Length: 227
Image (cartoon, rainbow, N blue to C red):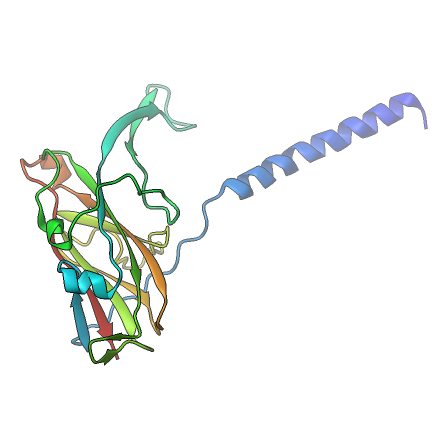
């Protein structure tokens, strides 16, 4: 084979490899698929645990931690219109299952009701692990549908094990449901003792476009079991 032919062959192979490499990078950087949302049962629960009380939080191994959220200026996204050089994001991004919240203040369950933030455009993170026990009092949890129900003044987004369950075009109980409406998120449809869930609740003051002189706080946090 002549040297010129060899050079052309190598160059052609390189051109083919570049889009393949870019494609591989894009696939590697794509976020994992979100779990499909499951609508919570509409019937009365068989058992309810109040996670805003010490006995209730203890029963499920809840350890609530809290953090302020900052709005920070960041570069505009790739492909934005030329006039947009910057945009805004939040810090910290604490929805991930492996996020290290060990330096956040640990609060008592009742202090979920404490009015936090400086008001107006304000957000707060709340995180806790939850572990399903074999029994809660006389109630046997095995095989139950476990539903986390939280009502945050004014809105909330609920992360479970590092993801917000959701599917385009479908009701999504993990995201904003409306002003002071409960977020009822199914954690499992047949739980067993020892099942663990990492919960992160993003509390939002609102309506955002009105920037009310209000605060962020929990009206309710409970675990519902259905059989």
